[in-house]
Amino acid sequence: MDFNSKNLSAQFDKAVSYISGSNLSDVDTQLKLYGFYKQAMEGICTLPKPPIYDLKGRKKWYAWSDMGSMSKEEAMTSYIHLVTTINPNIETEKTGWVTVSTFANDEQPLSENEKTISDWVKEGNLNKIKTYIGNINVHDCMGMAPIHWASDRGDFEILKFLVENHSADVNFQDNTGQTALHYAVSCSHEDICKYLVSVGAKINIQDEDGITALEMCSDEKLKSLLSIN
Image 1: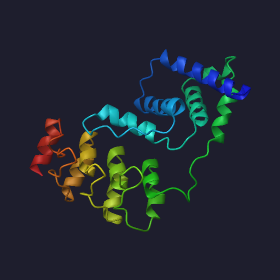
Image 2 (image 1 turned 180 degrees about the vertical axis):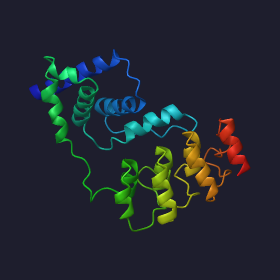
Image 3 (image 1 turned 45 degrees about the vertical axis):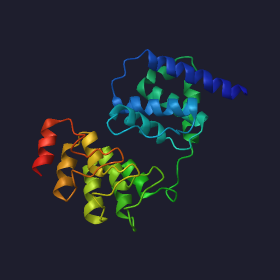
Image 4 (image 1 turned 90 degrees about the horizontal axis):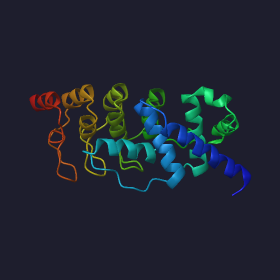
């Protein structure tokens, strides 16, 4: 390990120590940090997706798997950079973090030509989605279709656009048999649940574990809404 690698590792350890001793309440930031940390420590996520009833486990799994093929060094750098945005005062401390955080710009994201419509859905990039031509009822490398990502992310505007302008099949199943309604129910996205049912989403489609969207619904209000429709 050369000097730069040792320095990066040392700064990463400091950043982890800082977060461990902080009281971070923002869930999205927690998940991003978790994803960067797991990628830095273990590399590409190869674990199977947790079952749909394990909501916390699924969110953490997505946070890690979304890192894709990012290198461990890039993940460390991104972790450090995010910590400096949480506490800008860290940059004035004699830790070397200011220099290290500038490495974040060296990260090699996917080019626009490499991105799929699923990537645009995850990014919330409706303008790009509007330019897409082709069938969107197909599985991506994660075994999901764009409608699953939109439902999981709770992006009502994009999900509605996919259905009404790209003919997204509301009952299309991912590689574990889950529909967009399964995702919406698991994340308690009531507006998306109501919309999906209104355009023909079935409440009784079973996933590979034999669980329907209605059966996995623990919210009585939402369960009543689904049952009525």
